[in-house]
Length: 89
Image (tube, rainbow, N blue to C red; front, side, top):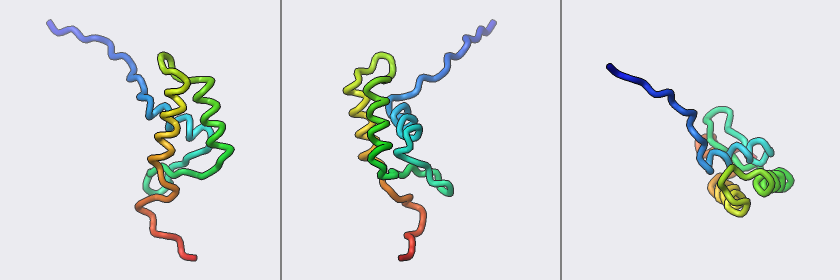
């Protein structure tokens, strides 16, 4: 007889948490056509994301580690979509 275990919901990774925080703060956005994340280069939104990370890091994650992950994600995202054609001047 086979038994099944109830699956637990997947826990988000620290990177996916950071991307969610950055989107919520308005620091990054998704390209509507291709789905790539883009840095909005908004210093106020970035600071909001860092504040969220300092005050509301995930359980078991130190605030400094959460802030570092926010910074790492920002450093890995460009301000343009690599698939969109360059805008004409």
